[in-house]
Image 1: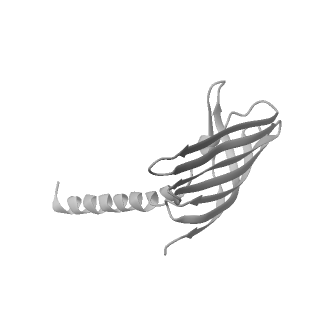
Image 2: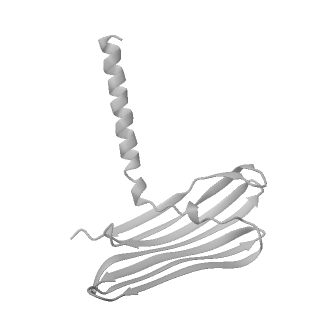
Image 3: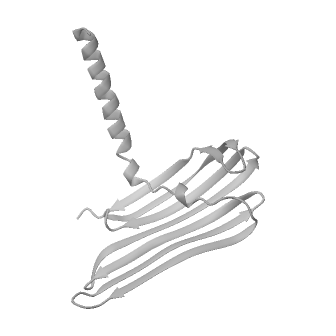
Length: 168
């Protein structure tokens, strides 16, 4: 390999590495709600809720409250779901954990292979110094492949996001 080819290859490698780090830096700021999707199917409401409550007392007083809740409404033309996750923890009266996530999403089927979705989200997280995040958006979803046990859906959305951090 001659010197010119080496310089060009090194320049491209630096550019690709910089792009990967630049694009990946925003990934931690997003909350993945895809893990909350449930299978479409039966018509009607369903509710799944987990509540956690822990109190320990002794040399230190420890309290933890938490919730992991999902409400679904399915119908022939689509589905809607609401997620609420959150928790609060204190140790000797001092808060050490505080996080909330509320996510509302509606998906309407236009065609067997095309859906439109709209969503909104509210998020706080004391560990990340996030006082408040609000997101609202919408976009299409395309069912590219489906079997009885698997489906591949590609979706893209435009959204507006605003965040407020405690930088003091």
